[in-house]
Length: 385
Image (cartoon, rainbow, N blue to C red; front, side, top):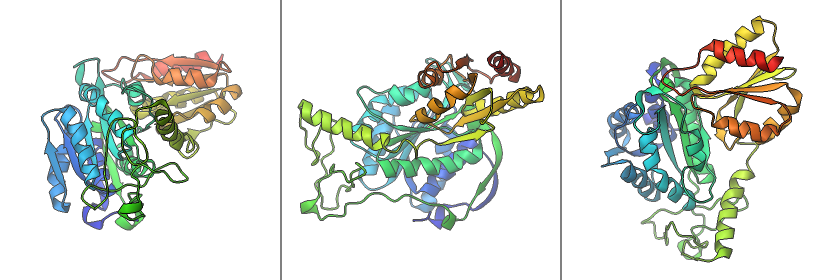
């Protein structure tokens, strides 16, 4: 299906990443957002609160991030595509309900515009310190999907992608922006509605008497029924069977968690979403994401000007991590260089997947500003020796 023309602002716009994210959510069909103000994400829902009523949508400011992160799930089960936005401290508060969304297979989007931390940290300055939290933040075993844009244009297009993936796999999707990308103003081209592919909700194909709320198909993803449509809708954070009823034993736990893992694992190739440049024949490949990838681009060019063979690997989907790609790449290069606006988070996955087949060089940065290209260049030169 295609996007609803009523809410698509087709044309060329000069807006920041936060505004573009809002427009992406509207184009994807989101009609509800719950949130609590927190820098640097507030502009997303400020815009949504003005735009949503124009297309029959609603924004509600909740009393805190805990309430926001569960209100959006209630609206999903009532039939609406929904999301919330926050930054580091609020994201931490949402973790219990992210786990709830995972076990109940509630399709929704959590937008985290990252800032310096820990705690209140640097509210108005950039960081990428929540990347591991996006994967491991809630307790128990679950898999999710996390995307990271590096431009306002991608804040628009990848927000649509995030909603599509949430519906396709019935998972909460993490949309990991950063302050620089959120507040950066650039040209954003919004296509016509008929050019925007929207993944529809997996609605029940059986009548109420034959339908089980968590009975999965061949792709291990269940169809969904909404409250108030005549179906038995029993949604619980407890381990449950295909009806949704609590079954508290090891067998049910194994079946539920294994299926929820496998529906993502089976799609590993589809979810390897990266941008590459000149990685074939490279001695060093720079692996980066978000705003850091734009700084890394300058460092890569500086290295090439010096005659070094340097490739670029930009992560667009960071979770699941592109393990297969890294395992194939590592034996072919001298080094993988990873700059991040944190003290070394995703580089741990890079090291694991490289498996000692090449040198892995971390270029950490505590945040507050971006890297200097010269610092990334120095790491490239070290790896090329």
